[in-house]
Length: 395
Image 1: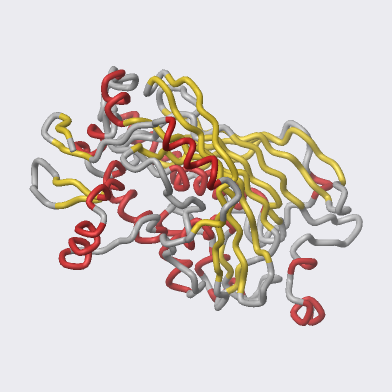
Image 2: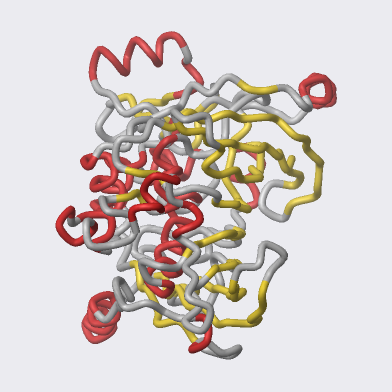
């Protein structure tokens, strides 16, 4: 343990010996210990969607949902992040992990009452130079999500950037930013207006025939990103174990590298506090608390599900986390249809290029999605083929 300003944090290093050990682990199924939700209760779904600011009635309103093809409340596809954040932190102790992107394939809906079991496999790594920390390791994993019927609901390939904390502090790559951001009162009012102008397609079907290449998605705006927004996400998704007092202290005594003392309050905080505690973020080499990577991609999926409506199906979603989204930032999520086609499954699809641009003009989360839409001319809906057979017959 060494001191960083007034905060102390566990320090680790990327060594040849550690990487040799990792080579032996590639292909190994990892023990998933950071499961939060497994049972898709109404509370679990509600807490998650409100934690990302998603007010789509399909996830929240039972009376509304009964009138849809699903016949009940369902979880949005990004709810799976609340089961398990898709990564297992393994190896390289004391070397910080920055979740940096996911490529999702969604296969089945998650219905109210489902139980989801996650799996994780370490699929590889590579070492690259880094302006942020001198060098970094990109770690790759694959996560799978299986329901109580043994059906594969979704899978995702993901990557983490592992960086030495001392090296990240010494470069100070992001420390020239003015944080918190110096908003004017007029700018803040405009952000609030943009947040409230969000459009949810809902029960009004978006037919494939009505979509054209070049169509723009109505923006979804997240911000100004604050402490309560981060707390709300943690309540809904909790990518780490959320506990207090004796429960947390017993955990930290077993795993000292997982926590550090806040130099201002003297309380123990998890390393995850980089997302809400400036001293902890500074100790990790970042100038200010920042959002969780899965949180960013959840916002991007919120953009897509708003646009596609209840009868659309998000088949694939890809995003890279290029810039930190700091407390006091605002993120404008936008999209454009770049391709329209019938895919190899015979579904009526569009590809959408997405962006997540902050107030500094940086595209913090570029991405790409494939959506299957209902076809008016052919009287088909992608949701129907994904419903349980008994429910599909009742339609």
